[in-house]
Image 1 (cartoon, rainbow, N blue to C red):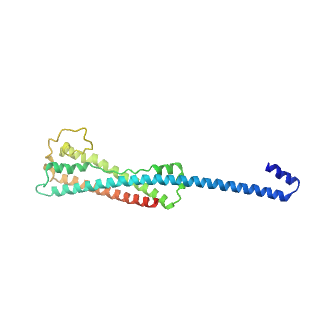
Image 2: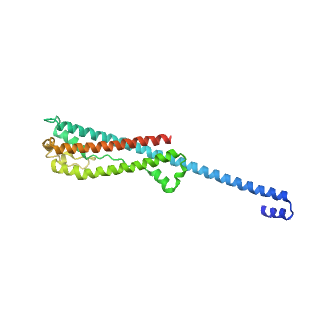
Image 3: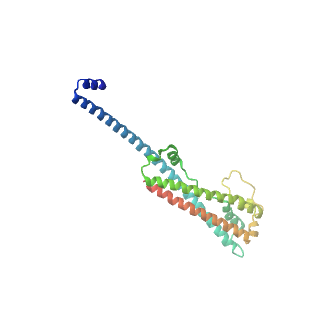
Length: 239
C-alpha cells in the first residue's frame, strides 16, 4: 500500500509527498528496531537476573560445603597433634581405645568439589556475555580455575591414603580398632587387638605417619580456607 502510494507520488512528481512517505518509512523502521532492541535487552536482563540468582545459590552451597570441610580438617589436625603429644610421653595418658579413635582420623580425607551448575550453563550456552559486571565474570573464572587446582591437590592426597596410610594400618595395627564408619546398620565384631597401637606409638614410623597426615591436613586446610575466602568475595559481588 505504502509502496504503491510512493510510486504514484514519484510519477506525479509530488516530491514533498515522496519525502514525507520516505520519512514515514524510515521512522517506522527506526521505531521497529528500537522496540526490538528494547525487547531483546529486556529478555537479556531477565535472563541475567535468573543466572545471578542461580550463581548465588551455587555459591551459598559451596560456602556451606567449605565450612563443613574446614571444620573436619581442623579436627583431623587436632587429632594428629594429640597423637604426637601422646607418642612423646613415656606412657601415653590415653587408653588404647582413645588412641585408636584419634588414629581413625588418619583415614579422613575431607574434600571440596565446587558446584558449578550455573557457571557451566553460562559458559556452555555462550550466555556469559549477559553478565554485565566484568569484575564478577573475572572473579568467577578465577574461582573455578583455583577450584580445579585444589581438586588436583585433593586427588594427590587421596592417592597417599591408599598407597601409604592404609597399608601401614594393615601391617601395624588392628584395622577393626581404627576403622572409620559413617553408618551403624552393618556392625562388625569388636576389635581383638586394639592394644596394638600401644606397641607402635613410640616408633619412628608411627610418628612419621602422623606427621605426614598433619602435613596433608594443613595443606588441604590452607586450600579450603582460600576457597572459602574466594567464595565470600563472589557472594559479596553478587549483592
